[in-house]
Length: 282
Image (cartoon, rainbow, N blue to C red):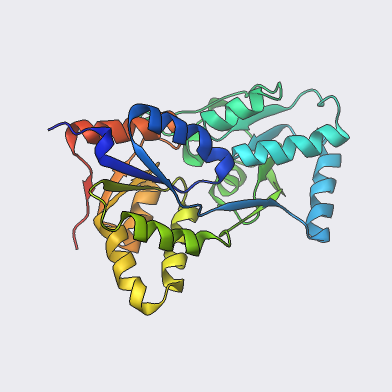
């Protein structure tokens, strides 16, 4: 039986810069929204890390292929490149993880060589590895723009194909100082609400930060907070995060095709129509 978006409150956990447009889209459709910022992005400040970035940027013309893993990687990476390469060198193929990242690159006048999408609509690192122009890379040098300490799967697979892969790690990810207070306020505001809570998580790191945040709460609040989280709906963009959420104890999960605003919204609307989600057993 179809349900109205007005009966749901979507908790948006992305950084403010990425959250604003989706927040507006959801409200236009009739969803209620709340904020819980679980991820903070900041540029690296360590001298050694800055020196490592500069060295990669100065050698940028030595790479045959360049991959940007996120919008943040595009913003920070292009800022560096514009300082040292007013005109980008010729002969480099550009790739992006996901349509949103590719669109961000396009705003800088950079077109991607290949945007791989899986049969299910996925746009993850795993999907990018299926791109035609990333199959025969033996002996090529590839640079990946990303945050510090990201997943290593993409580089590992490209190295298996014979490529030389370097990282240019541009930013740090962390849990915002205000997150604990925001969680307390959210629990107080929604604990007695009649609206069905949908907690949206766009990344495995946001899930990790949420679990860590719950562990920091006083013991008198942890049981109530965990029950609140686990009894409500969780919205995620990939099967990988579904599996991680299952380990964390979540029971009712909506899985979108990818992390784009449109895909996440489509998954929400589909749940409103069908009431179908992944039900995980104890």
